[in-house]
Amino acid sequence: MKEQIQEKFRTLYGCDGEMFASAGRINLIGEHTDYNGGYVFPGAIDCGILAEIKPNGTAKVRAYSLDYDEFVEFGLNEEDKPEQSWASYIFGVCRETAKRGGKVEGFDTVFAGDVPLGAGLSSSAALESTFAFALNSLFDNGIDKFTLAKIGQSTEHNYCGVKCGIMDQFASIFGKSGSLIRLNCKTLEYKYFPFNPEGYRLVLVDSCVKHELASSAYNKRRESCERAARAIAKNHPDVEFLSDAKRVWLDEVRSEISEEDFIRAEYVIGEVQRVLDVCDALERGDYETVGEMMYQTHFGLSRLYEVSCEELDFLNRLARKCDVTGSRVMGGGFGGCTINLVKDELYDGFISAVKEQFTARFGHAPKIYDVVISDGARKLE
Image 1 (cartoon, rainbow, N blue to C red):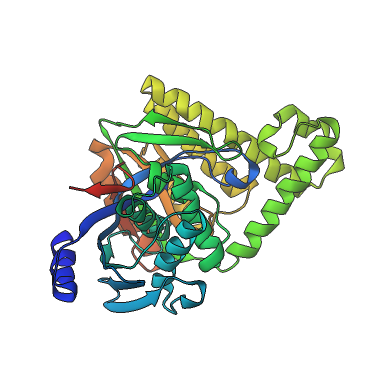
Image 2: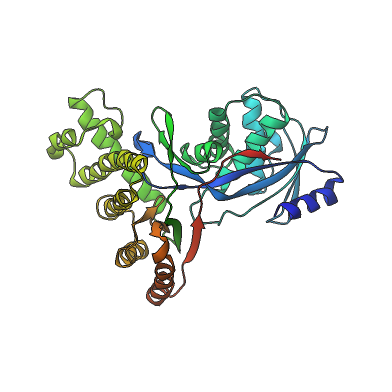
């Protein structure tokens, strides 16, 4: 991919630029905790976006997407937003950098990516982080890494119409090889934890389905959590989010909230604790406990939060039958991937069983992605 980018860059612009990259991400555990002020536990992966970039001395950006085989030129003022959705991400990063006082001038770029689309691995965050990091470096802006992540998040909000949280961009910017990051979504405090599962492999199984009710169901669950937090806060005024609440405090208000709101909150409070338990287990090198917490998360997402679906529950049950150490739905739910922690000696049998049995049951094969925890945004030498 690097050689293709460099060849196209020379063809279009007659010179060489500098190479920058950033990564997609997985989230090992901590699902639907972000908007509840809780912990998430992501890591950057060895798939991402790679871009060659060079300032061109004008007020125009000239960008070529190798994946779309498409060239776009646009200015740097608000009214210059390009029509192409992929170019809007680059434009948004330019605008959000300038809003924060960063210098942004015209540049030429060619980029490509190898993040599987539709698998919930945040290719858009990888794109934003690549260009946020690159502009900061090329124009010597001295913007800190937290602000670079927020530039990507604001790009989604203001130029791409997605009101996302900070996790995806944070993981793409802060990712470190061999480490996962525990991020407190309320305080933005973070800590790296070692993730070197010798004898295990981390694999995504993509169901290749996405059910349409996801966005409306997401909003309903968020509202349930907010109602439960408000009820608890009447007795415990310091509770701002469900992540601030103890399990016994939820029991105190059980008669005051609906059963649906209760079980949604029960899942979230349990999930916040599971992230902490997984962190403790990783520090001991105890991957069996990590795996069991993953299974508990899937149970909670399926039975209490009710964001799983038939295909994902099938994959989770099959993982148990194949003695996979840990498995759960990854992401918002209603389709997408399971993330699986698999012993090396069981890997081939698990993948074979998944392909054969899932295809027989649902009429199409799943996609398999092995992932390695890698570095986030960086300049390539």
